[in-house]
Length: 581
Image (tube, rainbow, N blue to C red):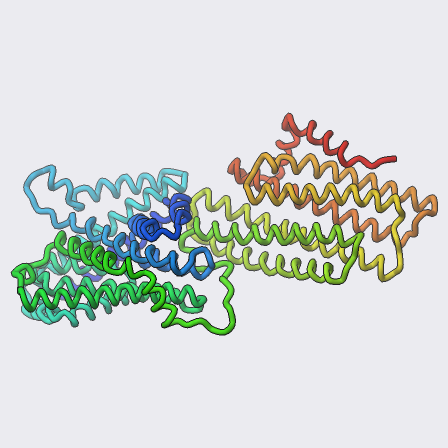
């Protein structure tokens, strides 16, 4: 094996790792909401969690990615530590799918139909389909499908290149001596763990082992301990991911490590006993690609069968290794670990936006009451809610911008844009809640009062604004276009109410019933209430946009005004919130 073979092997390895990464990310995007829905079905049932971890990892082809997601879920409070344990175990089984796919390269037959099963036979066809989908289709979902096929083709081409480059090693005594060293189980485990820790993918390290096995110089006695070590090495990614996370997230990473270390210790002991006492001839035979895939699957299934009933013990061990502190920890609102899985990151962002929306609307409705029945405690609570809304807007804005820089599907891109719009509207609603409080305080500080007629009129417009804010909140929370359609006619009624009340106030000033100073406060009050209804209209428009896959809010609102029910709802609201003579 000369320098050119080494360079070819490095090139093949790079293509293999790049293809695996490319395919995994495209699979995540293509799975989209389906992956999100699958993870939401998690329950306390350990079998459901096991199957979920298995299914997700089989889809995205990476147990490391699944475990990092799990750490993120636990860190953000979306999943309990107990729920995470069977998911982590299932991920270890799901990752064996890659080795089975790669084992197809070992098919050797003169039969045409069997030869067609070899990746080298069908990969060119898949890459042709992939490049057509990627270059000539406009829909992101089809582009992602093309990227999956191209990633797979790149992966298999890299695998074939590596296998060809290392084929000369079978005649090198040094290479054979190296793998004789790995027949020492402890050295084999160490080698597998170190290799996997470096490249941070057990699927990739198994693929590299399969490429080396194609030389015929790797025996089952050397391969099996290496496979066991690979399971330990893959824990590095989750451990790194847990840095800076809360206690439970660290515990999830520790569970992953404990599960693999304990499983490896038990089955490595069993392997050594079998090797010592029975010395089966199989262990001296050359490992095949299919044989490595089988050994990988059997080992992971055996580890899961052993450790699944001991989930509570693993949880207790993790709590012991990562003990509680005196101060309770809060769940991280937005976990950057989930950015690699856009549907899940969007789900978390939407949940935090819903929390922000509730705070903003509650602050507004409290402020409306506070204007007529003022209390310092309530005013302070409103200001605290507004501060929280400011903080959440900053967090969400940064998070969604980071997410938008990723490769998103069309739906994810639209959802991220819609959330970026509504967080600004909800934050402004909380600002106007403080404006109402300040108007109430100005009246108190200057010993001013509004007339009885003005207070009656305030009760009418305040009731309408309460109603429109509640409609906007419920429409956003439920993504309900029916409720969203009821916002715009009420917003128009509030616009007319504002003008009517402003006119009424001018008449009262002309009659000497109120002062000009009180009039300025009244004008500010009406402006704040009317602007709240405008923001509610924007939120409702975003809900309608999301349902119709349209980002033009103004067009949505124009179409809402042309709807048959609009005039009927407008008349009903105008009658309900009419100002008496």
